[in-house]
Image (cartoon, rainbow, N blue to C red; front, side):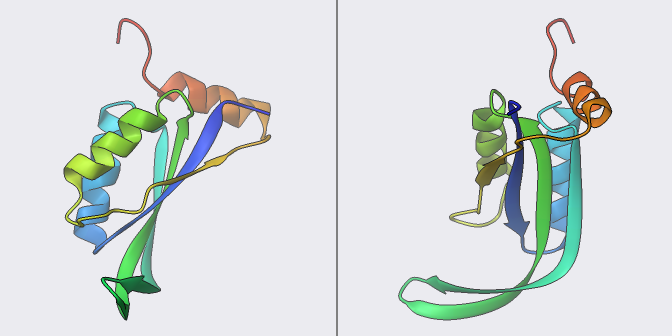
Length: 109
């Protein structure tokens, strides 16, 4: 088991997704954010079923940084209740996990 996490979030479109992704990487809260455009989301909101097109963000971070990632998403997002779900990364290639660690916030940066 690692301390790394994959955080899932959605955005209203590519412009918003890029804004959030760039801010997370610039702040060193995420090593990488993949943006998957044009997904269809069907969900219950305020008592009715709704459907919309969105972008999916796949955010690579650590469990230590998750609270700051969550807060940044809340700050940057246009939604009243943005999705922010963390999934623990059990294992991965050691080289990739080392790169991920080196890309995240460090003392003195």
